[in-house]
Image 1: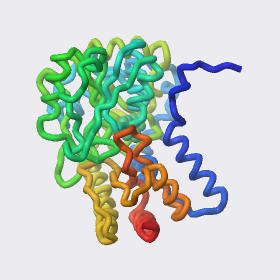
Image 2: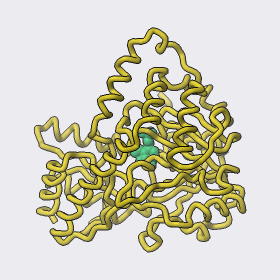
Image 3: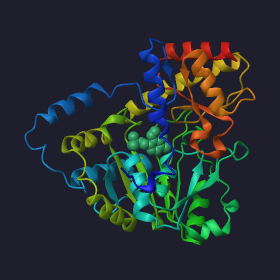
Length: 385
Ligand SMILES: Cc1ncc(COP(=O)(O)O)c(C=O)c1O
C-alpha cells in the first residue's frame, strides 16, 4: 500500500504520543500524573451540561447543519465580541463557526497557502501552526519567541526572502506554550508588518479567558487596521472547559472568512445544531464564571510555582494559559529530561522541542490536574532533580 508523501514531514502528533505513553504505563499498573497535554480537567458548568442534554432530545437538531451556522449563533459571537472585547463584528460576513480552533488553523493554512509559500509561525508554538502549512505543501518559517523579548516575536528579524513569500502569519497571546501575555505594542507592530509586507495575520486567541493577576487579554481585532487583512480564532474549549465539544470561531476579515468557508463546505458539514445552541448559551453566560475558572487556575499556578521555588527551581509565573514553561534545570535536552522524569517519577511533561526548535531547553507543565495531584507531581519531580 502507498500513502501520500504529503504526510512524510509530519512528526507523530505530540498529544497522540503522550497519550500513548500514559496508556502504556497505566496499563502496567503505574500511577501516572499526566501534565503533558492541555486538556481541562474541570467539567463544563452544570447549566451547560443540562442545556446540552435537553437539546439532544429535540427532534430538529439531528439534521445537517450549515457551515455558516445559525444566524443567531453568529449574532451571539458578535455580541460576545462587543461586550467582551469592545469590537463590532458583522455577524453575516465576519464570523464562521469552526469544529475547534485546531480544525480552523489547519484548514486556514490550506485555504491560504500554495506550494512555495511561507507561513510565519511562532516558535515555540501550537503544533498545528507548522502542521497546517506542511499539509498545504507550503513552508512554515519560525519566528523565535525568546525570553529576553518576553516571548514576543522580533518582526524586524524576519528575513526578507521569507517575508516576501509569506501569505500567512500565525501566533497567539496569551501564549501556548510559554504562558506569556501580549506586550503592549505587539498588535500595533503586527498590523504595521502585515500591511507593509502584505501578509495576512491569524491571531489565535484560544486562551483569551484564562488570564491571571488582573490581566485582561485583548482581541487582535480591536487594533486599528487589523481587520483589513487579519482574522482571530476564538475557541470555547479552555474558556468554558468544553474541549471535547469542539466549538470555535474564525472572526474578522470577510474575504479570508469567505475563502475558508469555500474550503470548509467541501470538507465538513458544520457544527452539530445542539452544540450551536449550547454555544449561544455559553457566549451569553455570566462572565463571573469565566473569572472563577481563571482564579482556580491561578491558584494552581501559585501552588506549583511556590513549591518549585521552595525547591530552588527558577520559574517565571505565566500571565495566562494553563501552562508553566520551565527551563530545564539540568544539562539534559528537553526530550531527555522529560523522558527521565517520566521514567523515574511517572510524571508526564511535554518536551519544549516538540513546539519548535526555540522550545529546546524547556518543558511545559499543564495545570490540568487537581491541586493535590499537582502537589504530588511536584514532590516527585523535585525529589528527582
Ligand atoms: C494555542 C492553541 N490554539 C488552538 C488550540 C486548539 O483548540 P480547540 O480545542 O478549539 O481545537 C489549542 C489547544 O490546546 C491551543 O493551545
